[in-house]
Image 1 (cartoon, rainbow, N blue to C red):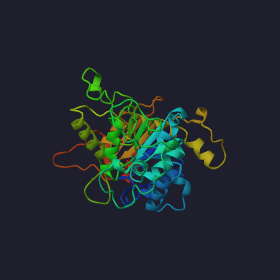
Image 2 (image 1 turned 60 degrees about the horizontal axis):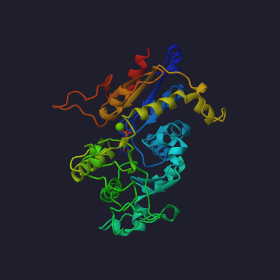
Image 3 (image 1 turned 90 degrees about the horizontal axis):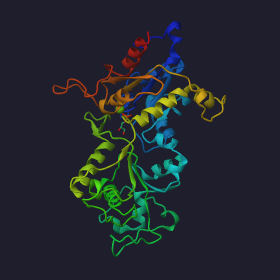
Image 4 (image 1 turned 120 degrees about the horizontal axis):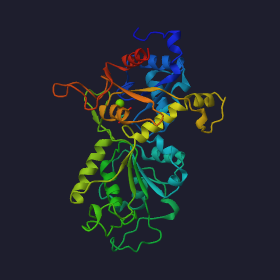
Length: 393
Ligand code: G3P
Ligand code: MG
């Protein structure tokens, strides 16, 4: 009953605002749907209000994630309600320029490296390597037994006949012509085998120009900025999100991708005598991700027409319809609320963060207020939408 059918007068304003829904801790908690979440989505959709799902989850394709959400919300009859509206932590990479995608070899790690590889290929990356490929090419890289769940069981030969050399002098800058060179490292979601991934990523970060099995001579050179660490054209390091915690159906918050990154930062500081790990982060709260979501919302009506086969799929800025406000409904102050507060849309659209109590954030005796302030704190996603609709008058 909390969700009333909107009046005709308010319907006229529906094209002026939009919703960005966080998923974990807002629409579901692990396997459990948040009560009323499916009604909210149907109501918004039926009234032609624009929306996206903006999650820091990843490691699966957008369509697979959409199917999971659809199942958990039991929205089976409403196929296109969710498909096509899904923005995962790594989705903005699909819009990268082709020159960035073709510019070298990418190492991908994550929960399911084989799926991650396929997603990267679908995005247009040409040469993709997983930790499993490296271990299959040279088992000596990792001295311990592997987990028995087949995580690294699937592998393909290294691209273009490359190999992992056993160099007599790993400090030599004379590199065999067929040595594997990695140009970018993408951590796409919560790694399952931290030990393997940490070893391989670290090997690359200390390497000479990304050649696996080499060591940079610049490392530790005090005359260079950052003491020479990450100063020798090593691969760029990207993490798909920095969420330390996320909400599942277990009562206590669980560690997320950001926890792996904190561990890697700590290790890097130890091995480099206190240097700061350099990397780029996608996902909320990064501006990059909010800008991507904003553009998708501007194009919403055009995208919907494409889905119905009534418009040409090519991106056309003239098809963008302006917005006044976007309501970001999230449960994590560090990512959802902070990101919406920090984002300044070039067209002046206001992003308004709403914090719900069904997720990561809880009011405690020591933390009465969230660190990043939302416009309002409400019980759940239903109340969040009701608040937003009232705010629209
Ligand atoms: O792994 C997912 C988690 O880090 C957060 O997902 O939907 O709350 O942004 P979400
Ligand atoms: Mg969340």
